[in-house]
View 1 (cartoon, rainbow, N blue to C red):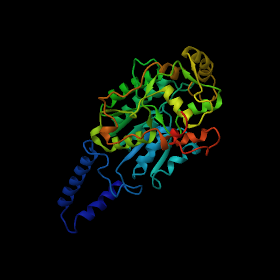
View 2: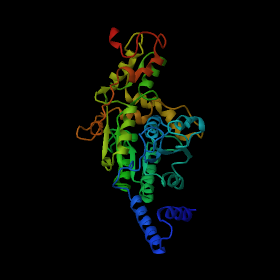
View 3: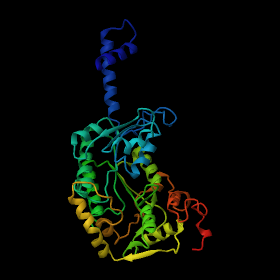
Length: 392
């Protein structure tokens, strides 16, 4: 088949009656051009793009996106998919948990692939056709099957090695702001180890470190709101003074798309954070005000050692029992440990500004999803942005 198509190509290119020598020369020329086009490392991945940039265009990107079924994943797939990219989404979900991703690109452009992070052959199969690979696989607690090391270190290292081996042009690895070997939390320690492993195996990888993500499916403001509704007082770790620069999830997804399309970003580390600094307590108060909590603020300051003791049995079982348990939200040891330090962007690190993106403010529309938790019902009071009308 391959031989035939190249012969057809030659027949079109060479007028009838040309000597065999000319045909041979042309064959060699075509072959040499193909070699050139394969080494596209110095060109942007969109250099073969056609069309106006909509979903039925061809962006030139063939991307494999790991972690596409997660919170950040759906936004990244949306932005890369709707600009006309072919996408391969390896995941371990059933059809229902991934069907929302299928419609984010044109017909047949988005393909699901069942895989395991321990299966090197499946990883290789997933990436060998792609010029872009994005890794967003992460976990905020450990289970019997997957430790932090498995998810944050072993898998990214293996993925980076395989990408290097098969000649993937761009690798974007999503880490976390505050990833460091000195962080008291195992989550952030393993994130830092994973970054180092990716850099070692694929020096040209772009590492993205987003701050705490805010959005409809987030595990931060939603958890605060849930605790406020469920308990008489919402718990805060220690004094709730840990500082953050929370960022809207869609801005991070836009940034990842911009990074993918700009070859200058290769090899860099981006820190993506919102403009405003909030402590954990600020965020909790902000949520309680937004959902119109009667008797606001309802806060219980719990010493971290007590929270650790409360969370320990659940975590112990998560690591031992062979059946799924309810997801631990906001009470895991790694989460509690993480609360003793600040998570602020290094002002010298490249971020949104270098990509030409202005991150959205959290007030107003961005947190409109919290309306679902409103005391007095969804439509009680005014739209989310009009908090100042209340007595604070």
